[in-house]
Length: 150
Image (cartoon, rainbow, N blue to C red):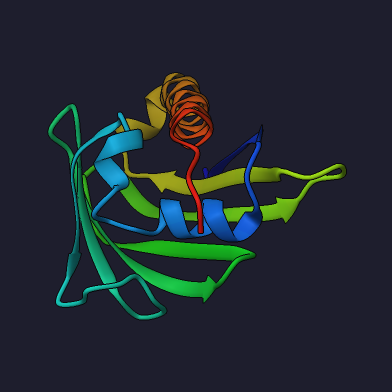
């Protein structure tokens, strides 16, 4: 059974600033506390078709490929290789200008699990949601306290 989660946060920076900061793999580990490795494969910058290799703080690695890269609005990836538990995994990050300045950042993840991992689907949903919400808080803190500029 496929699962999907969405979480958002408002950040006091422009969509361009937030988009560029999140897609800069040289800065990724400064805010993304879920990861211990984040690197692009064979490319200097993220773009459609580029693959990335990320390893979580728990040691689980996932290769993804950018399927959309529309600065400063949205970026999306799909899993090409990953942990055995996932049959499929995809994610998108939206960057919408907020009223009265700032950006609403929305992460959406969708996935399906292989048997027997689907039996712990509700627990995995809670873990992923908690993780995504923490990542968004860390991103907000890093950008707002570092006064990121374009």
